Image 1 (cartoon, rainbow, N blue to C red):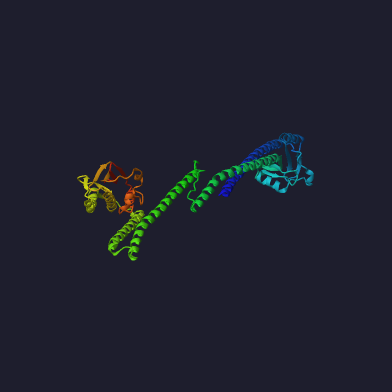
Image 2 (cartoon, helix red, strand yellow):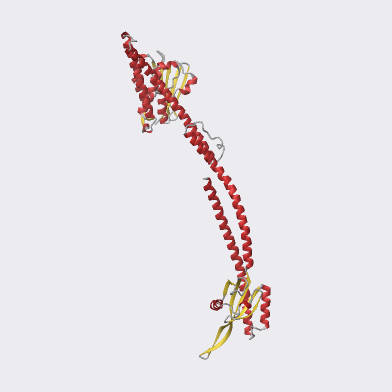
Length: 481
């Protein structure tokens, strides 16, 4: 990634520099070439007009007056001027850049003469077959004279070429400037590339280094180092900072989940170990004769009780597994929460009678419709009522209350009995939690309240608990219709 970022950035900068340089030099070259062309064409135009006026006055173009005129123009415009016949024979040349001794015939190249006559103009960089010491920018035009001929005794005026005029100017200053500018451009481009290389290397390293460290941290975390955290980049206000925070949050969540898993396995092992030890102890005692036959019936009752306890534990764990799966969430329907709560209470009538509890209800007289899964809420009410009855004192009160507020139904279940210590209240809904040692003697396995909270969380409802003045109250919510 570091190399790709570096290569991509430098390639882009190089492309931009080449594009910018090409455009600049092309524009400069074309501009100065146009200016040079305009100047030469203007000189040719003036000389051509003057030549026509000389011919109209029936003077000779080889005369001293015309020659002096050409010398003046050549000196002022710093150009070289050639005057040739219509066949291309050089009649005279004015300028320092031409060497007629190189051409024994003293003629311009045939193809140039033909192009001048055919196109009525000639414009090109050329050395005139080495007549010029270097390539010159040459513009040529034919010089015409007016002649009158007769066709069926009618006079016709014709323009007949009697010669050609060429004006050449040195364009080396343009090339020299381009060479100097190119050298300066190349040095500047090299400096820009070197500076870009340094800046890009630092920037790419600033981007890639955190990703490498995050990758290493993920690798260590995946291989069991649960304490791995990234603090160095969490203060950054960019995507790397967000990624660092996300990793730390994920690591913390997985660590907590792993801790809970370990606790869960330990709790399950503990809950299974106690009844299995009891069952094995009584069974071995009956087999080896340690327990006499007179006590074997009592021992079998203990074994039967512990077996049912194991069965309840396994059933609750399977139930909890189903609750935590996505398939557990079912469609919500309308039902009367008052009727459901009373129906669950009637199913526990034998336990209420056994403890001689006084049940006090404060329910809406016309019932209260709520949204939810009746089967799931039946289990919630059953677990809460069964728990309340189990830990109520003998001949105590069991209060059931349903109120409505702001579109929510609040279902309250309260019992009289031993209070839950305040430091234990935040943990009563944890798996396998038992508020005190006395609860270990009960038939519960510590999963009932956890299942209640899991079901209510599935439907985005809440549950709370208070325990004071000898009364423990559980309150959960349901959404009204």
